[in-house]
Amino acid sequence: METVYTAQATATGSGRGGEVSSSDDRLKVDLSIPKELGGDGGAGTNPEQLFAAGYSACFHSALQLVARKQKVQIEGSSVTAEVGIGPDGESFGLAVALTVDLPGVDADVARGLVEAAHQVCPYSKATRGNIDVELRVA
View 1 (cartoon, rainbow, N blue to C red):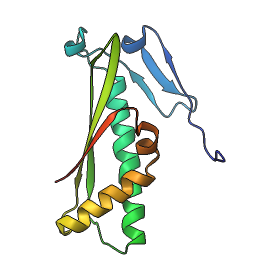
View 2 (view 1 turned 45 degrees about the horizontal axis):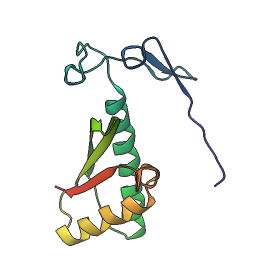
View 3 (view 1 turned 90 degrees about the vertical axis):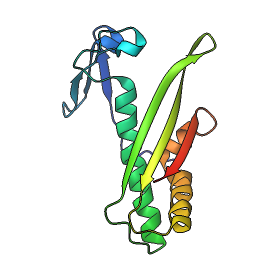
View 4 (view 1 turned 120 degrees about the vertical axis):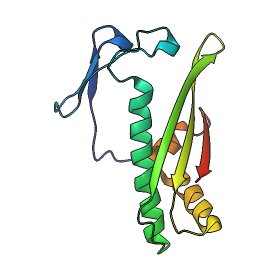
């Protein structure tokens, strides 16, 4: 693979309760640990929300690419990513559910588009075989 773009972000402070910012300063957010993970549930975001945002956007782009290639209109489409975290042996693990809404698209066609997008999405490629990813068509 030839890299054509590299994003860089740095976490500082107290890890999940610190801050994260991108090298170009377009992203600067405070982090808070959710109450469910023993934190104070403060106003900041968390790594799981950031991962969900990235995965949903990337998958939606892959879905649009696949739909264009197959000449299927998917106007009004959306992808919602749910990223769960929980104990996994001695550490923690992640699980993802992607819910794809394709208004007006036949259910079988929609399922085919979602499966095809899952094959080309870089986030799907990166997670394949590492974490459970459930695909749902709304």
